[in-house]
Amino acid sequence: MSVRFVIDSLDFVRNAGIHHGRIPVLELARLHDLLFDREGEVTYQITGYFDKNNKPTLHLEIKGEIHLSCQRCLDKLIHIIDLQNDLHLARNEVELDQNDEEDTSDAIMACNDLDVTDLIEEEIILGLAIACCHPEGECTMQYHDSTSSLTDTSQSAHPFALLASLKKH
Ligand SMILES: [Zn+2]
Image 1 (cartoon, rainbow, N blue to C red):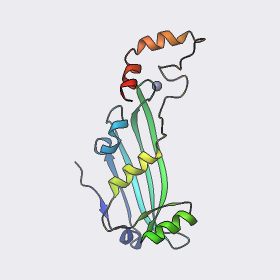
Image 2 (tube, rainbow, N blue to C red; image 1 turned 60 degrees about the vertical axis):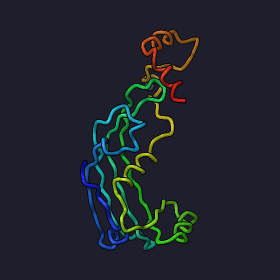
Image 3 (cartoon, rainbow, N blue to C red; image 1 turned 45 degrees about the vertical axis):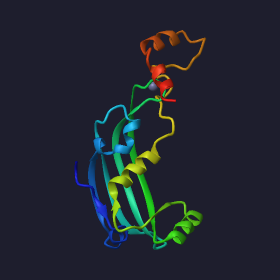
Image 4 (tube, helix red, strand yellow; image 1 turned 90 degrees about the horizontal axis):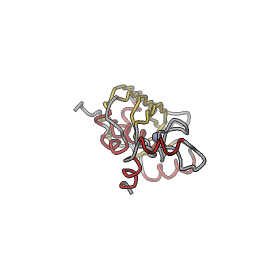
């Protein structure tokens, strides 16, 4: 396990902090249920700054490639991560509520032991589509369509895929 990177979020902004690192997919435990395998890693950069309204803000950039399981055929689905997000730091509940009303950027509570790995993991999960499937035509499991002659052959190629997806429910 690599050492987790923990920051005092407001201090990080005051010091115009900048940090980049890599996280093996193996260590992103909350993602594992969605994954086909645990290969690869994500790279990230976190920057602290005050935005134009002088709000303390964390800017995140996350890049990488993860292998999801297609929700239709359960085969490998390559997902490219290329995320950028600004998170305002709220010093209390009032600021947090105000931000939700006034600002399009998300806000999180400022804290003195913010686990950056957790934050990255959270952003990746939020960035995933709810149902992750291969695009039409690239999936080995076709939609049920009586007019398609491909249906029978593609289904027999993955006899257990449908069963496995039923078991999940
Ligand atoms: Zn698929």
